[in-house]
Length: 114
Image (cartoon, rainbow, N blue to C red; front, top):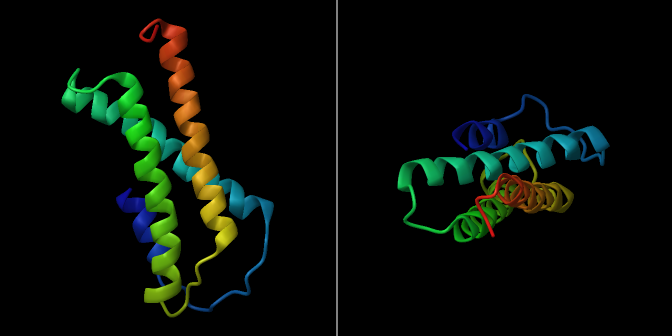
């Protein structure tokens, strides 16, 4: 998440025009998909069984979803050369949601969830 924050708030030398490109949205989706999946495994490893798998997945989905929206707000309000983008926030959110469904499916398939 530190890398995502750094890359998201890194000043650009030239402020680009806002363009809706599929590749850009795919990168946003992928970052948050991976962040959600890795976050679930990190929490499970560090906290062992203090939380159920289902609660861990839900918590990480909410955390990464809100974080993705917050980053876009920060880009809009706190940077000069970056602009927040609603479509980036949507791509971030979809990545978080799909990441949570994917990790749920992994645990379900492996028999850890009944």
